[in-house]
Length: 454
Image (cartoon, rainbow, N blue to C red):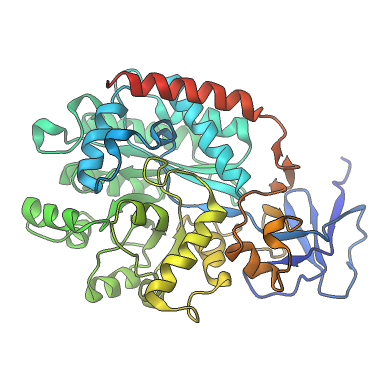
C-alpha cells in the first residue's frame, strides 16, 4: 500500500496550538494525524513530500461547538419570538417547531453544519429533542446530513415526555413515550456510535431539560448511558425561572434534582450553567462536569453570565457553544469566541480573560467537554483537524499580535478547513456543498415552516 504524503504547513503568520508548544514554523501532517511540530526558525525533521505556504494564514486547532439546535436555523428572528425571555420564547416557538418535517431537518442540519465549518468548526454537537409525527428518525436524518459535510459530530438523542397536558412547556404533539425514547436511544447507539479515537460520529443521550421530562426518564437515561458508556447532556441553570420551576415542581434546585437522578459524573455536560450557588459550583467541579458556555444566546435572552472562572477553578471543563440559531441568531464559532471575551471581561476583567483563554474554551476545553482526547490541540499524535484564517483582510491591517487580532478584530470565516487530514474548505468554499443552492432550499423551507403558524 502506498504511503500517504507528508505535508508541511509552512511558516504561518501565527499559530495557536492550545498547549503553549512552539510550532512557530508550522506543522507536518500525514494521513489523519499531526506527526511533527516545527519550532520557530527550524525545518522539519520529517522528509516531507510537499509544503503549503501559510505565511498569510493564522492556524488554530479546529474549533469545537459543544451545544446547538440545528433545526432552529429555520426560525431565526421570528417576529413573535423577539424580545422575550426563555420561557415565553419557548412557548411561542414550540408552536412553530411542532410542524418540522424530514426535509426541513436535513436542510437545517446541513446549513448549520456548514455555517459552523465556515467559521472554523471541525467538530459540532447538536441537541435535537423535537420529534413530531413523521420525524421519529430525526437523528438518522442528521447523520446523513453531517456525513455529506465531512465534519465530526456528537449528535445527541434528545427527548421530551412532558407535554402541556402534564404541566410541561411543549405541545403534546412533539413529545414521545418514555419506552419509545429509551428503545430508540439504544438503537442509535448500536447503529452510529463510534468509540474510536478518530470517530466521525458519536451519539450522546440528552433529555431536553428538567422541566420537559419525568424523573423516571432522567434516571432511565442515566442508566442507559452508563450501560453503554456514552455521554449525557441537558440544559441546566440557564435562568432563574428554571430554578423556581424546579423548586415548585420537585422541591429542590436543578442541581440537586440532577444529582437525585444519577447525573453528577464526568460523562455529563450541561448547556449554559449560569445560576449556580458557590456550593453548587464546588459540587460540579468535584464531579468533573462539563459546561457548554453560550455567551451570545445568554445575552440575547438576557439569561445571565456563566461563571466560567469559578467553574474552571473548581474542576469543571469549559467548552464554547453558539447554541440554537433562534437564540443567537447565527452559528459562527469564531465570532462566539469574541463574544465570550467581551462578555466574560465584564465579569472578570481584561487581565483574566484573554484571547488565548477563550480560544482555549473553543478548542481544548470543548474537546474535554465532549470527551474527545485527540482533538482540540495542535500536538503530535492528535487528529489533523485545523482551521486556517486569512489575515489578509482590512480588519487585520496594522495588528501587532495576530492571535489577539483573530479574536478582537472579529475574524468571521476560514480560508481553509481540514478535518481528519482532508481539506474540506478551500478559498472559503466547501468542496462538495454549493452554498447558494443550499441557502435557496433552506430559506424556502423556513418560510414554509413559519407560514404554518400564521
